[in-house]
Length: 488
Picture 1: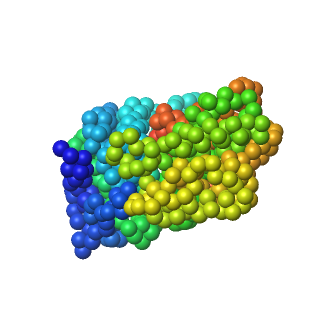
Picture 2 (picture 1 turned 45 degrees about the vertical axis):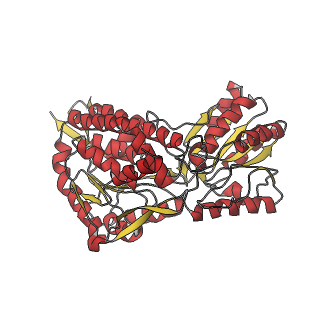
Picture 3 (picture 1 turned 60 degrees about the horizontal axis):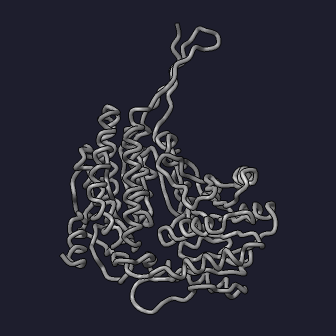
C-alpha cells in the first residue's frame, strides 16, 4: 500500500464523533470542525464540534458511572490499564502515523511518544493495587487512628495539542487506577489520537461512562459550565499559564481539586567544566524533542563565557544539518510547527532578538512553500532584554546567552515567572548539588537533556503550575484522604 493510501486508512479508522457513555454520537446539530495536516495545510478529517449540552451530557455519563467504578476492585482497574498498554503497543505504528498527520512531528518522534504515553498505563496499572492507608494508636491510647484513600470523583481533563497521547495517558492512567470517572477534552488541533485512545480503552474493557471524550472548538463556552457544575470534583489542565489562571478562577466556585501543568521557560546551563560534546547531545534532546514544541524544551541556553562560542558552533552544526520536511517521509528529523500562528510567533521572537543585536548562526528564515515549517535556528549574542529570554519559544530556536560565574548563572536561570524544568551540565558533583538545590524549578536534569519519566513526578512551581503527574505521587492527585477515629 502506498504511503498516501496508508495515511487515508489510518485516519478513516478513527471515529470522528463524541464518545459519551460508551457510545459514539454526533454533536448537537451535527456540527463539525476540520482537522488539518500542518505539513500541507490540507484538511484530513472532520470531527464533531460539541455544544454546551454535549459537554453536560458527558458529565452526566461520568457522574452516573462513578459509584460503580469506585467500587470496582483495584486489580480489575489495573488489568484494564495493562490491556490498554498492550493494545497501544501492538498498534504503535498506526497510532504514530495518525499523530504525525495531525500534529506534524516526524514519525520517529511520534513512535517515541506512543511508547512513552503507553508506559503511563503500565505504571498506573501497578499503582492501582498499591493504594493504602495507615493504622496508628492515638498518643493517649484511647483511640485508634485509621486513614484510607478514596477516589476524588468525576474529573475534567483538558489536554494540549503537542503530545496528543502522552498528555492524556498520564492523566487518564491515574484516574482509572484510583477509581475516578472523567470527561476528556483534547485540543481541537489534534483530537484524532485521543479518539483512537478512547476506542482502545473501550476494547480493553473500560466500563461505559468511565471515560468520555468531548471534542470542541468552543473550549471556554463548553468547559466552563462543567467546571462550575457542583457534581465535578477535579480539574486537571495542561497548557498555557494565562488559560490556566482563568481555569483556576473558575474552579474556585466549586472548590475543586486542581492540578495544573502550565508554561515553561527552561534554562539550559553549561558550565566551564562541562563535557561540551555531552552538553551538545543533551541540548539536541532538550531543544529539538517534539520540534521544540514542548513545555520542557530548553528555552534559554546559559553558557559560561569561556566555552560559549565553541558550544554555539557545535550546536549550530548539529541543528543546521537536520532534515526538515513532512513528518511521515523517510529521513525527516524536523516537521512543521502545528499551525500558522505558531510559526508566526517563532519568527517574531527571532526577529526581535536579531533586532536587539543577536547573530544567526543557522536558520532564522521562514521557507517558501506549503506547510508551517521553520528551520532549526541558533542565535548568539542574545541579551536579557530580548523577548526570547522572557517568553516560551515553542519552536526549534536556541538562543545562547553567556554568564561569568555560578552565581550569575543561577540568577539568570531563576529570573523568570516560570519554574517547570532546568538542565545543567557540569563535571563537578559539588557544583551540581549547589545548582540543583538553587534552581527554582520542579524538575532538574543534571547532564541529561530529558527528564520526563512515567516513574517520576512531573510538574513545576511558580507560574508553571502545581500538582504532579507520574511517579508514586501521580495517583494521589486523584485520591482523597479520609481519617477515621475509632474509640475503644
